[in-house]
Image (cartoon, rainbow, N blue to C red; front, top):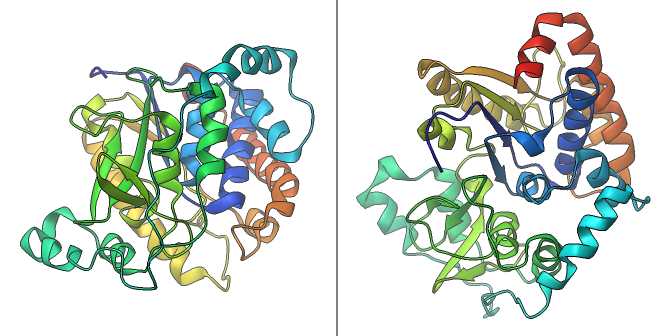
Length: 322
């Protein structure tokens, strides 16, 4: 992973409706600005965003990921790609999931570790380590990604964020010094919502959802010194979207994202952020795991992004350059 990439794409957490939000954003960006996430110099994925990021890094266009999400036929290009890569999944298994042993906290020692280095952890990450281990397997998530990547990692292209339960610290798979694993396992770890999904074991350590550290983790691209950073943030909210039942959470995520954006802009990056509008939020609903809303979310978000781009031709020029 080298410094000075032209474009970084950041795809945040947000459940199944968040996955659909990303695909709506990317669909409109490709249609109006020719922006193709597959060509980004680096793609950062957290939780649901890691699924879309892994697809892009494996060569699957946003339109084909939309088709897969809704159960519709994919393009001939995507079908040929999957036929060529399907054999990679054979024999590659999730390293291990944590056994469910009652409802005790997963890693109570995380509180002690956080007290020793409070600047390196976030409250949400500590909380995720204190919740009991979930009971739902992430193997289906890992297997789907392995059909595309097998046991190989796309060099310098894909970064996947998770939280190490033992000390509540963020680990970015795909960076130097991070534990080596396959993309499917890393994505499963990033998606392992505490208390629901079983934590994923990599190199003897348990990992859970990277959203516990940050819903976007946009700051990890600072080391790449990108000229343009495009951020898709399903868990926050666009200005002027109005009050919603989950407004407190969404405003908190927006403030957190704003700090990450400031850090990137201080490094000289142009940062473009896409957050749910009022129409997007109505389509997404309050249950981020409600898959039946996927088609509606993709269409609504794509329409919102198109409207924004049509009103801001200079933004289209910026994105087209990326």
